[in-house]
Length: 221
Image (cartoon, rainbow, N blue to C red):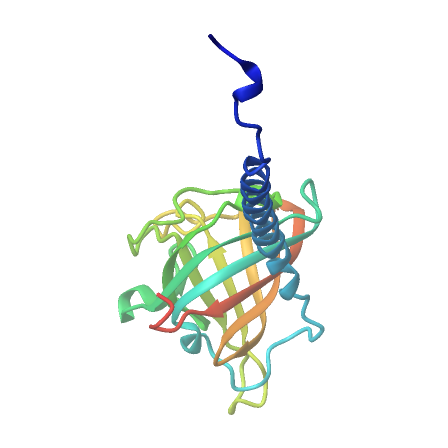
């Protein structure tokens, strides 16, 4: 006959096991939150540039390479937002280096020393996307680097370096006088990368901010 009094009494050994499982879950959750905070906080390392122009002697050829790109929006529909992505820049050949106005001879004060590609969600900071950022077609590159050389017999005056995003904006067979744009203006450059300000809009800027491009070494690629 069944006698309840003879059944073993629970010693409570299952409770520590449940507590251990709870602690493990808590650690996993906290680690996930910490990782999320680190990811969100990383753009804070990209600070605005105080200087307004490049140092003398800096030229766009020095910007060739692979970069981690961060855009931070200061004004516009996504003010306060930031986005990260990848940027690759390579030297152009002599034919694609020249800059022409419609039907004219090459400009003497400007060149396209670098072309490239990018993978970044421009819309997340309120910037407009004009075509394919990943296009490697030299006649419609995803990214073009324009350098305006200020007339000087030496490097005593700085250059103006601009990165223009979007294959439609960079199409060489079309002379654009207005329309949408997303452009990065380099204000500081060094061995580890470059940074500056950016603006984007249609005909006139509707979003602005600053950016940082950190060079990726071979061990990080």
